Image (cartoon, rainbow, N blue to C red; front, side, top):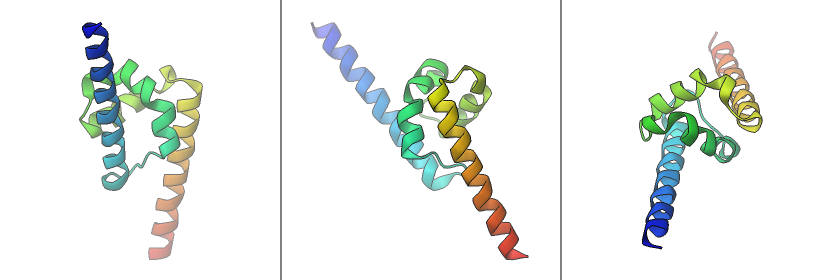
Length: 97
């Protein structure tokens, strides 16, 4: 019972660390994950990139590296968020000219 509880607490802690990492990524990096992407991709991040947590740039690079292995939902929201982010950058650069 203690092992199960410890495992649950550890997993919850890792999930919180990953969520905090993605949240920090949203405010500091050029690519911002939506809350939907965080929800859809948490399992994939643990499955594919757990060794990179909590290093935000490495998590991001790992997720893109393993894009073909992501769940369909995660891949869809990441693609949508990336396209939206690129659109914002394009609009910003067009406005500067």
